[in-house]
Image (cartoon, rainbow, N blue to C red; front, side, top):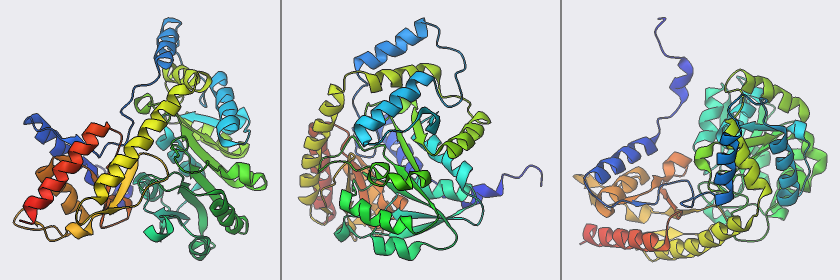
Length: 399
């Protein structure tokens, strides 16, 4: 049938977060104060000098196409920032500026993955990783991780998942949704396994500046001999509170970046010119506000984790980075809800929304049934309010 939708869409899972967002919007429209623990973006504004740079760019006529892979000044700034923050020095021709880190990941997939390829993804994972792989005709190979191991893939599990069909492995450190981060020693062990297999390592470092334990380790800095098979993803969304500006980038070997240039040239062309100049200001300007945000998130982390662990039926490890707490909530199963009882993490998320007026994201969306993700990208006062709302809902449900 000529009017049929593309078959590739049949492999994409529907987003449970859309239903959650719709329900939250419905409650807000009725005047309900919903505590937003589901949001995946900082609640801060970008630094003032970033906004000023954007206004200046508009006034100076930054309204035309740029080079597909980004303005030269931004690419140079990305290289300098990467050397300063990540410990290795890419070249401008290895950088492709995209419409956000998610777009960069999709570009990489279009350049690398083919039908029949396998892409290793540890669970819990960010929801778009496996869906993008499926949309591109490849097969996500999900490697389960354990909370007792910090939700980090072990070298043994990695080695077991590798096959002749493995094209890539996607890792995120610190992680969305768990906040877990790989240490230098853990990266070293994983890279020893990676070195023995002809595949690509795709690393999402979008949360790397929001690390509260130890120091961030970037694989290309640790193993420069393997850089010709590494693709790094980064951006300004989380570090500079610029999620809506949609500026991310990939750093890849020149031959891969040329392929990404071709892919992006046939889709979006360049990222928005004004946003590129704003990102340039963010990278080259004072970094004080990045630390201010990071320090605020660290304080909120303590409030959120302590609060969740004080709730009967809920346990939560302390995340190393990002701004998410990933709580084990199966202890809430059995609480009455909608004429039945709570049986799944999705039930729990809808129950939290309807009974506690708290928005969250069920762990099943991340490949981790029984868990719920709570974002602490909100004020300490709102975190405390949300926790007390949940406590009251549990008490009512068990009375």
